[in-house]
Length: 243
Image (cartoon, rainbow, N blue to C red; front, side):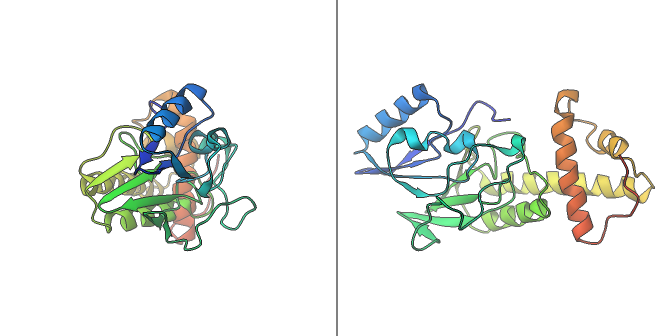
């Protein structure tokens, strides 16, 4: 679910900021510490969200956590993210800025997800990935929030996205449009199947996510639930959906 692993970014100098130090992997942290040392040390750590593959290494860095919260789970464990105001959550005095970064709330992949903007560059966590699509779990509105977050990021008129997984994205608008169309395409296909009378979750999954490999079908079923919840919240889900 994490492609090649989690991308950690060391930004600025004298001192630098560490964005998403990643899982509790000592060899990875050695590289982070070395990069930060070359830039004058670590001013603090910022987290795009609390999933463990982004946050678990925070205690091992022995540096102040300036924004975010360390989590124990991830999207595959049913954790949707830390709630704002929960104990142990580090939030800047001005929640719109931390250090040199503008903080852009972008819930959807996780309830506590944010992007950090620096000029025309966004460190976008798991909102947009270098390749593939982001996992959006159902939590009573996460897909609608996710689509809103994509629109919000697109409106920032960026020149570079630095994702939490995968390569850098040099055409942010095109990638975000691709992400929006991907979700809306699934919704159109799901609505078409429902309008034709299909009510079985298993058959809906096979029909609408027919391009998904068998080993990824359980994850696709979770994503489908997020779509169904969105339709229900909008009053567009017919009755009688069965297992």
